[in-house]
Amino acid sequence: MSDRLSLTFHALADPTRRRILERLNRGEATVQELADPLPISQPAVSKHLKVLEAAGLVERRQEATRRWAQIRGGPLKEVIVWTSEFQRLWDERFARLDAVLKGEQRPARRRARAGRGPP
Amino acid sequence: MAPPKVVSASTLTLPSDTEILIERSFRAPRALVWRAFTDASLYAKWMGPAEFPMTRCEIDLRPGGKFLYQWGGPQGHQMPGEFVEVAAPRRLVYVDTGDTPSRITITFTEEKDGRTRVAFHARMPSKAARDEILASGWTEGMDACYVQLDALLPSLV
Image (tube, rainbow over all chains, first blue to last red; front, side, top):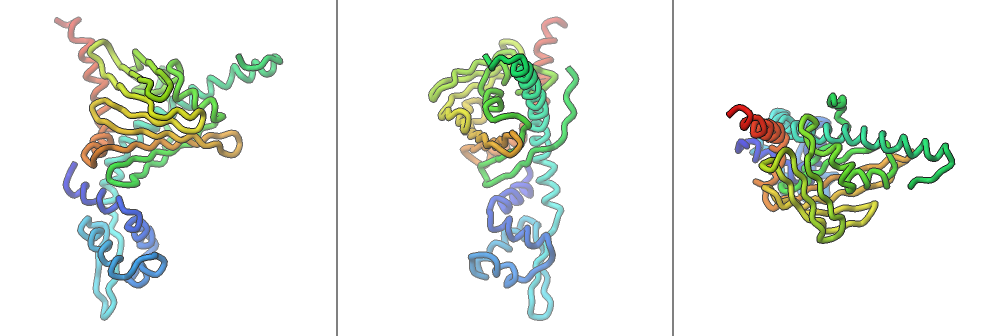
């Protein structure tokens, strides 16, 4: 796994950072705006933003006295590609499980109609 | 058997550096879903690659009880482990003692309309181990190919 991907996983591993990203996904925001709905201070939000910035998940720009943060999608796409094969593996298993569950329920219904309980 | 059409109905999240969580809802009562995860004859039907079915499925379902899954012949891929908690039909905890040790917690929750939600949670001892498991999506297909190759080679000699 590439170091870049490790950085992304690390950045995404924290629930506060994921909440920050969810907020940024709705549009650019200042540190103040990001801190408002969170139970943490502005300096704490700034620290989280630094981690997200290092992973390339967030880009920041200065506008007069305000500093804006915006989300960058590239690293997220890498994570999605990396995890999608694992998810596909399980989706295939689960699709087979669907078939097993369906098959198991058919005889049970027949038995019920015939007035007999399950064995 | 043709592989069933796969619709991505699961959600995958990475709660931390050492965890993987997959959730999926099934159109079946909880008792039956529990059986599909714990009854060897049912489990063998859906676990593992479709083109390479399980050849050995032993389940001693009790805390401390062992399980062993195998694909292919005696040299095939094995997955050994031990059950930690067996709380039918709600919660199943086991440790996978194979190549990449992990602790798996499966939670079965009843939903509306007789559906059952399954939360499959894996915890690994390190981030490296977690990444290795994630990479299994890429490697499992390869394993199956290698095992098939193993089976084929003697006939070619």
